[in-house]
Length: 297
Image (cartoon, rainbow, N blue to C red; front, top):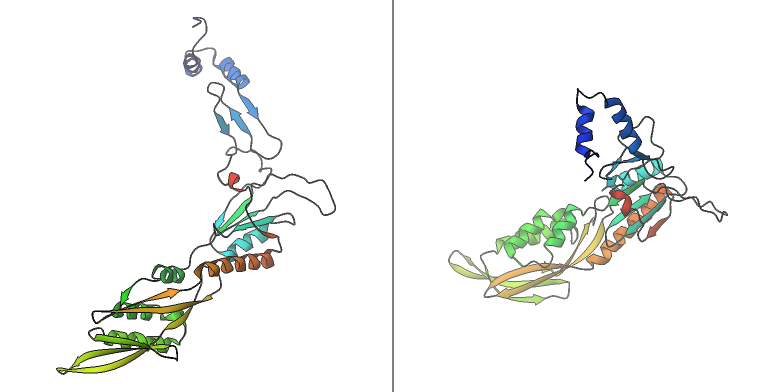
């Protein structure tokens, strides 16, 4: 090591020492060593530290307004997402969406490509908005309990708690089924007979005043619910098949909701159509490269 060459720490100590008469020149020397890089378009100015080459952003210290918008707000509501787009979009803004990710991304400052012009003008592309579709509470409940075996009392309570989602048979009929199932929770089931009218008759015995009484109970073999796959989406009809089994005199039931994945796909496509109408922008199935701008420079 050159004994005449001071260590970086010695320079720093000298610069802050009240006994030093070289403070002014050292500060000026430090300024001369500091390289400020001001990119004309696309990014914020940065400074490179002379000792360890660490890059520091200067976007927190501004003497004037920023040269361009840089933001990445996230939304769960399609209406708020569309309102934000309409506030900042221009004719060159673009929207992409993914059914797998259940996400929409709008690049508001997308590259300009005027109609009839073969030369595109590049823009920074770091003012984006993201809509992440959020599963609705009712969709989550029905999906989580799909094909879950339940004793008749539990199944009856489930129907009662979620009767607002039942479309057909009527809520009154389904509540009657739930009440009937609750009433037979202590009965012994003997058989089940499928009827031609879309119901199944459960034959069971119950103890009434010390005697055994044989009774039939009819419940539908299928029903339909109407639920939203996502917050802010339309309600979609979902067909459900009632399944049951008799084991040692006990009745166990579950429902099977049909075609859930196509309904989710249709719901995403429906939101895409709604956004296309609300924003008047192209909405394309696919991905943009906007992910690189979500973290920042």
